[in-house]
Length: 426
Image (cartoon, rainbow, N blue to C red):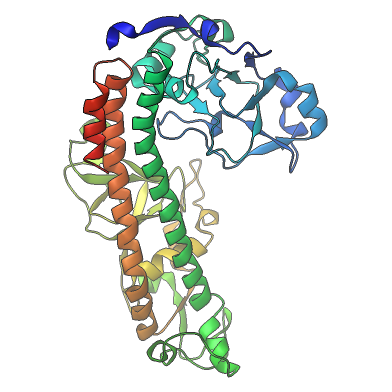
């Protein structure tokens, strides 16, 4: 019941252990010159997110050695600790939990860490509470500074939180956590599926495994009807040795990089058409620019980033989108082939980094025979469809979680009602 909830400051909810509330090391003490190849990872702003489901980004970590770790002992964050940004994007909240790759981290000079008292508060409940948009707005509203927003340790200590008894906290996190766990499971499954396709592309079109096996009179480990469509020898080409009967041509003979179209955020209308920028999806609209499936290539801002679109899409004017032409019609093959090129290096000569379309067109590309391309499509299309279904389910579950979150952490929605809603979606 809502009347069982009580209000506490973060200071009152901290663990009785030393340094339960602490900032990272002072500026220059943890600068890049102290970073190492291994050791204890450092949490920086890039490892935190404003997205509720992203508790910690464990990619692109930097490390400090054991000497620095001892020096920064007060700034060590462990499983169960929350991490906040105190300068810059101050509404980022992170949680070190069972999903984290490491047991311990060092928070950087622009972060703070908070160890809750387990007898008073559930760490995951506090994460959901503090990453709720209303709480993030409150933190931003109380921020200090002008050019660089700040939210300091004193402000964090004084932040007031309204929480229910511990058993109810556990029940709420079980509901929201069930949704997040399914979303995470879908992400892991999709990652595995994508690895399978990448491995198949590399085997067939980079390492030429079936061709080499046949040339060396080994079993290509493919059904006979598939093995028969691969050549049994290699021949010299501009790209080195390639399968006999395959060819080398320019990318410009295979694709057109069509310009995306301007669509400012304020001009987008509610709809189910994904809008893509140079680094992936950036929103939604009610009109499409091109039909699915499609390939979007970053033109300005993040030149050369290659993104797959499973549904009809709108590519904005910082991008190109691929229109196949010539002998190769396989978008699946072209997607991985473009990713294999170092497109980012083919920049336009201007103040703003950009992709030079003509330089892309002049890049050489291996083109397999049509039967092999058809066989590749036949194998990977069902995998891409499974990935898309997983993404669609995760999007629905994320929307449900974001709807339930503010109602659950405010006591507006009864637990049995929330459990019934979630049960109907799983």
